[in-house]
View (cartoon, rainbow, N blue to C red):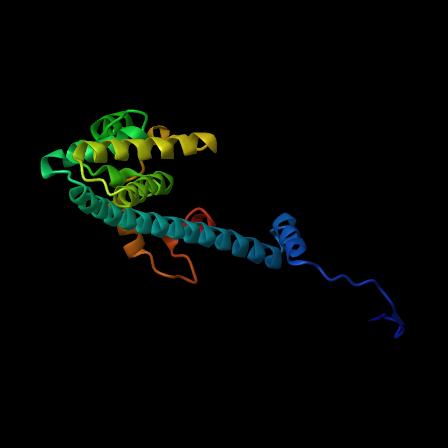
Length: 220
């Protein structure tokens, strides 16, 4: 019921709006109204905050995968040594796994194809999908060497190549991107820097809010 000027009252319809309805009204309202302008600014800033949060989550995921893959790589080297692979054959052993997974491309050939400098660690330029594929190859090879009690360097090399090919075939079957076709990601050290400098924020500073708040926000 609402009061009328005559002193009487009248029943009028009232509506309870969902969160999404409020969002649509604010985004499509007249920004000359202070309430609408404030709401539009709020949603723009919140969207940017979410973008930054998503980026941080993706960076942390990649860092964890890179760390775990590096540890698994070392463990595989130990398993290869126990399987009879001598130090001078380690390069051949690890290259066999790459060739199986990358359709015949060894480590150096992969770098050349992706435009990665020769001195850089290939794992440092892999995105999460590529890292996960390599981690699976590495762990499965390590387990297979132990399970089948392999104690011959040539057999160990063949086993690594076979496992790499099996992982590649699985990627093909499910329609995934073949690893040699995945572009090189930015160097992992840049991701580390970004994560180290990221801090939880309730508000955006001028650098992150630039372009959202107009010229006034850019000049502050």
